[in-house]
Length: 247
Length: 272
View 1: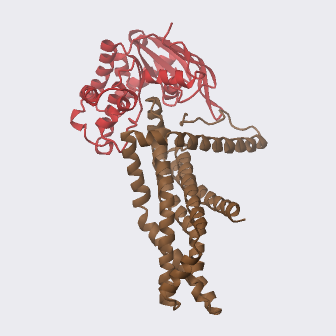
View 2 (view 1 turned 120 degrees about the vertical axis):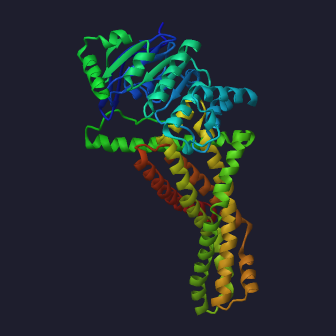
View 3 (view 1 turned 180 degrees about the vertical axis):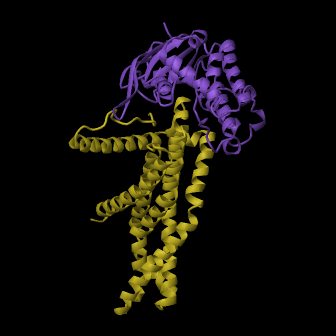
């Protein structure tokens, strides 16, 4: 059984279908990159997995549980297994970076302060933010805020991590660091990762499969090697646009 | 409870009548959401008092609500008392009854104007700030992030803010009455030729325990109203910076209107 499954999911906003029959599935331990033009519903797809949004029709299933119709207790169980990196980092402004990263451990676990400090230090080291631990979000750059958000998403050692554009706005060196980290977390801890990205080279480097969404539908789902050779006109168009961007 | 809510309908209304019905349904849904928020916030009060981190946040909110608004509350209540004394005093002088100035000012302040002016100050200074802060957090996905981390935004954000208002509003309401009475005394002594001892004796002769309790009850209710409206508006914010501005504005307007309505209703229930 797949760990994550979207079954013919339709999501309308004000009558307009952002997702229009989206179907795909992910296996445990897989890294999938979700690519496609802006406004095709990639972030909306992620939000369905933790019931920040519910489908107009269709089903979103995580480990056999229908996320839209499950009880609050089941939803909490699912959410406790999921780390989520938001586009802007979503850090709390009145807490330092270290306090932000420690927040889910402090509020939702019975770990001692020493254990929390150790885990926070490890997560910050993984995203190369140890030096900024005592700074407030307003005192660090947007890229650093995103890395702090990533540290918070992985600190609980969740088995599913959802990344909403983890490398957008970052310099190429940091982008590579983040992509390497996503892959490393997957290899060492078996974390299932769904990565929304516009960084095609990063997606090709880290993903087991790439899912191309267009007009709310999955139009191509294949391995990176197959994706670059795909004869699907939508995939060819997307690849051509990406190449054009990099020239 | 889930704080991050979706629109009730995925499609646009097809007819005008459907639009009107949906507006009504949204209004009822908002009332239900606010009532649910208040109930759950109250249920979390013990947790706020018991957890060390939450206590620290409560102390911070008490400081923001109580201490930081003190200058505004002082000026507003002082001038409220002075205006009351001048208006009433000039009329009383026509009948040579200035000795009752203290009684008139005290009754007006303790029963109505003290809690009312305190409520207005809190709605403008604290309610707007809460709505703007939570609204900004909502549009920046911080509230959603808390929900995903299984940290209840109601316990973490709403409950300490509402509790701080509930604790501080009666204290500030009482403070308003005291400062307002002093303001009235200043006008009485300097402009109406009333002796201060005479003024105070008149004021204290009419002050009943019931009036004090009704005044404190009003302030308490206003604290609950301001907190609930501000938190509801903050958590319902959408559409970025424009939405934050709109929520802040609505929080102040709705609080003002509810303060007036509840003020009247409590007066009617307690004095008729």
